[in-house]
Image 1: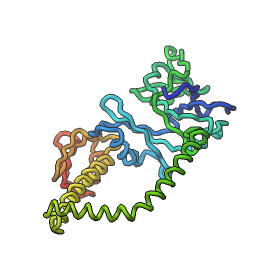
Image 2: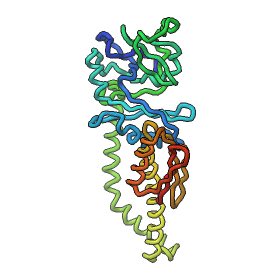
Image 3: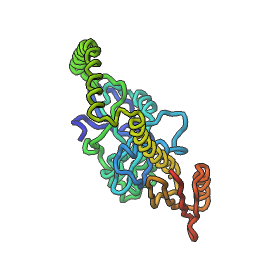
Length: 308
């Protein structure tokens, strides 16, 4: 678990709190937007880069959203949240921000929701298709009436820290130590700066020795050729990342990525579309990027290919 602090489930119908100690807070689905996608990426940081494009049209425009990403089996879970809205809500319920140690989201503890968890007098949290959702209490059957008891066992391993909260990142002691370290760094920088002039002359001599050892490098043409080679490689990689970003933006409700081929010169991708209207929208996005599209006979699937 993240730490040993008490975990509180914060929701809109809860009564105001009056705390004098640090706690962890879990938030229900009203405070985040969730999306699951099977994407051909290996690492979470890669998936997080394309998270904003996945939520286009799903979240309110004009807000500063942040994202949490993790993997569940073969799918990536993308969670978008507005930290300013969350902060304002917590303050309205009496939470002192310096007493909020970590924030968690109900979806992170989906495996614990094997029974309903009551949320005030009128709502409950339940797990449907491995997604935590809010339902009216009146929708619960008699068999579901025995509800869960919320406790610290729901605490996930990974949480987020409210920005700018005193005590959540550094203690006074830690801040003092860092201040001393930064002062030391400043002195080192000053001393090293005074040596720079002398070292620059030594550097010039070393460059001259290198050129004498490798005469071919004395040619500007050779040096420019090497630079051009690596610029070309870097440009190709940037193009690949841009293509993946655009393709990720074409994955919205009703669209599933079924295959992706990507090499140095071109890419080929196939999307499975829920219906003809969705396929039409995907095709329009592809044509906007001047990519070739091919409808798969007998289905709403589309093959798209283009050059890098």
